[in-house]
Length: 181
Image (cartoon, rainbow, N blue to C red; front, side, top):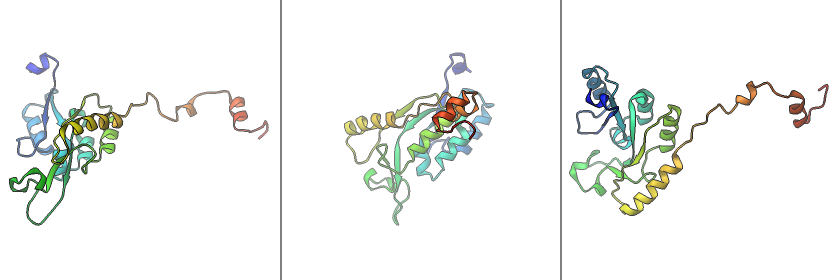
């Protein structure tokens, strides 16, 4: 309620190893706080991907509660020795590891399209954690990556022209259609 008094959303990062680690645990928590409108989600597809949760469908389900977005990539390279978190090996050697945006397996075109579809109004923040790339390079490329993926949402449908009354003679002339055709 204190956050509400100040007009601030609380965004919980759905994160493996935490109390809120998937949609089910978020829903349970949301029920405990009586669906408080300030109880929301920080969407990080890398954490969902490494748990084998469909992060695009997650957006479809939870988009009204997604108020923050970490742009972080990940990859899962299954092997016969270790699972997602790789027995606490070096990040480089783990089956599940974080990568710079665009270097892993996350479908960011799909994510940015879904967020545009649902008129997401929050931030897309680079959370850079990569087991391979230099941090300065990752920061520079990450900012450019986000800029390239942001979709300015159209203010009207692409085919709105068809619903408008127009100068039919002018349209027919542009199409090369004579009178009487």
